Image (cartoon, rainbow, N blue to C red; front, top):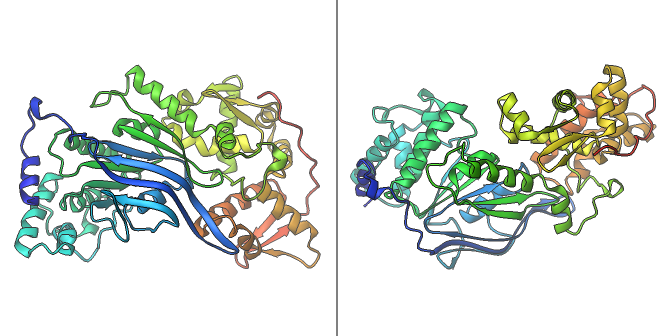
Length: 465
């Protein structure tokens, strides 16, 4: 029973019991040729393509990738919350036709019902399964005690901190004893210390050998988090749609030691897989030359001009070349935190990634050394080679009747991106174009207008990479 399992979890661990759930090789979840598309303005918008994946008993699997790689969509397909467009998703060999009965989900945003108490929120899953009132109340109390919130049974979510709310989310998922616990960036909304504590407690429970679930699948964009938690890391790429780029087996003893050479080496390997543009482009059979770029295959990273300019200056002060992991450490950040800025510098031709180093190009060095007005000129020339920025700039300059409404660009982008992605693309393009004085934007009527500044020449070629 659920209550008995949770009571056992509360029992102190002995060395002999310090084993994870038995990895008996049983395949709990499997996808074969999984694709997922959403409706676009003129057809289907692909998000996932050709995903072959197995989740076996006794393992923690991390789905790792940048924003837009489809990792959360893949998790929802495994949970049966989103139907596949083609291919198959099976649970214990049976095709999914709806919500997966063997999984429970922990969300990034906690997803608690604010009008219910902690006790009532935890009972929800058991109530949906038809468990009687007395039994589910007892099980919920045990789960609340297990995750360290005893005394808060009658509290409402608004009375709890972020970490406490996520504990309620874990208790609600674990109390139904799912075969597979699924977590969608469960620690990303928490402060660093709270996330570290909660992640550590979760892994201690997993290693206890009495965890009420047989496998864990966690979505993350954080490389170190994936290496800390997972037995297997599945890296997803996102150009132009989500596909498995590489899989890493994590052969490191638990609990993981961040200072172990193998730990650091694996982080470097996974990082290279996440930033391996040439390898991914070859895998998809696409050319990588600048003149082949389109709005569809060249999304803008979510990086502000101030952000990537600051990064370029830091690299310049380190001699024009620096190890990204070392730079992130110096800044007190994770490598993942500066990847959007790295992508922006690469896209603009200001820098290139060589092994683990970020290297300024000749143009990037000029940009980083220039004063404000000079840097604007260099940036404008480079930005005009970015398809979306060029599209907006060209459209407003060739339109004699006046401004161009943002809806025009939204319609074009809808052929290739989801509505959320379109918002991010236009926000970044607006920021870049305004700074470069290529065009202006009026937020009230949502209109782009030509800037009356000087014309900008084509940028020089990429050099010094």
